[in-house]
Image 1 (cartoon, rainbow, N blue to C red):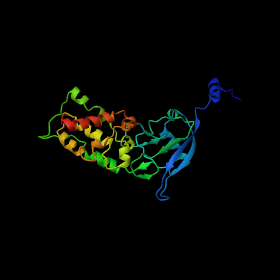
Image 2: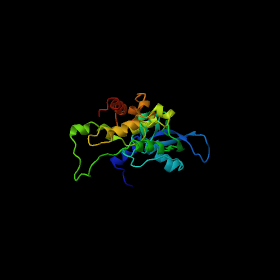
Image 3: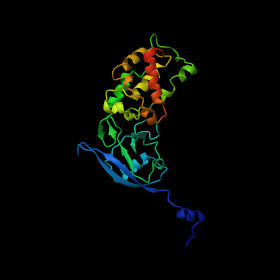
Image 4: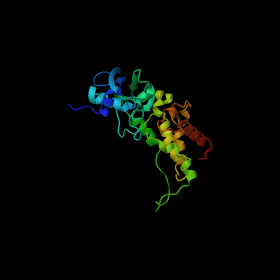
Length: 252
């Protein structure tokens, strides 16, 4: 009979990295009921894994009807924004160990947008606000034969707001948006900022007039929820204040 090697003996005696974690998920299926309910799932998971990994385990091993969005799973696409323990986060960037796994981890859909099923919301109003601020370069004259050059200083002016991944974490953390879905919301204003302060763009005045509407930038109450929620670290509230200032001074 073969004698176990030292490595195998040590591996067998090493403590398991896995812990038992309870996921408490807010479920909603309009085909079954008009009311949402909470459902608990217990899984074994390494605390260094992510909430998204836990959701995968539940969907693949326990309940295939669990519905949520995700794509790249690396914090780039922004599709898996959800409320985790009461805060807007990306499930793919939130580690189990960072949110007190000794208590149930609550997971629910982001607020302010209609829930379609489980953790999936209707993003159409969010993207319509984004389209309404004309998030593209506006120029006049003939099409250039080379790239439009810009100084490092001019680029730095709006560099922060180029980081937006349209996850809706900021907009759906805004109490004004919760109460009035007509408000453009932080994400749309951030993307307007990105072009308003771009020295190559000529559509700043148009965007400012759009945001000067009753549902525009003046609805912001500076609660900083949006800045706290942004998974990319964008200074969202600062960007909104700069747009307000540009509206007053017409300098941008």
